Length: 295
Length: 202
Image (spheres, rainbow over the protein chains, first blue to last red):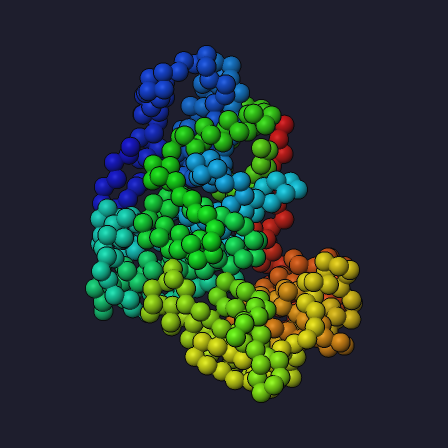
């Protein structure tokens, strides 16, 4: 994995890292799974959303393999994959999905005609993960990401923060700006604690509202920020109180991973989706509600 | 005493109560276990106060909303509206045009008082005889800007048929209507409100 130092990642450097490691990663996947190319039905890759230069590396590798070995190539939406792998692990058929990552924060559910994931509520500005990373940088925490903020928040005391929900939508930039200002008068611990509690409570409130409006019997939590122990505890308490099921995948499937892309590519392939290789592009802002669900 | 649940939302429940012999609706905000206590208490207190204040302002401004009977820290007791939700009428038959027009007049009056409803959908509009009542001000804001008012229109637009919305809109005549309508068009151009084509599959 790309070594994350104190300040986070540099997009172009990550892409360079990917391109110099992609061949070895694919070789290792074959070695570990003991599969050969003959046993592969299709090549799935991430179309988006994501960081453009990084997506391109995967896209080029997938198309090269597909052309060389004559396999169909399947473009997969990254957000769909995070949700589908959690559904796969728990066997839930129609959960409400709380999808929280660096760039995305959405409350979703499957809707018919045509089948697709509808966004019931979402962040109106930045993703909760990027907000936490941004706070870590303001507070000089290192490495600058959510789990460092979570560790710092332990034992903190609550100070007043702006709480911005609009129905099933929510916003984080006001909270981030306010938290940054509070650092001059309060300890990093108290600000980190209050920021995290406020942000996660906003997401939970939106999720509970969507749950009541759409009447589902389970909630899944997925995406990078779903690794947060505190957020898991909060969403799970809503499910307990409402007597519904809760599912969150092991952390290795909430961090970005290839298994979830393969899972969705397989579902797409089995349900008859085929794509012209020349149309297999990347899309940094590939919205989940544009994807037709064919399975 | 048996509590009769009238409605259940994410942040409050409404139960049927008696108040000096008359039927009343009690809206209460119970604690949420997922939130830490300080944040939870503060939000419930702030929202209850804000909702009561907005209802009073609307009542004084002549908007048809339930009358306030009494108030606690986390509770509001109000007149019980005996009627049908517009959303229930939608399921059975269609919404009467007069009801759409009257709702539009109430919304315009509300907007002229500087208040945006925040959740203006057919589920929050009651028809009682010839009268219309607007309920649920838990997400409302005072000193509302054009964008917040436009969101009221957007929610209505997305909840009714296009021809119903155009009837609604022709009776919606607040001051600054043009600015609100152009804000609505602006919001519809962004995010998930964009009409979006779902990918076709070869």
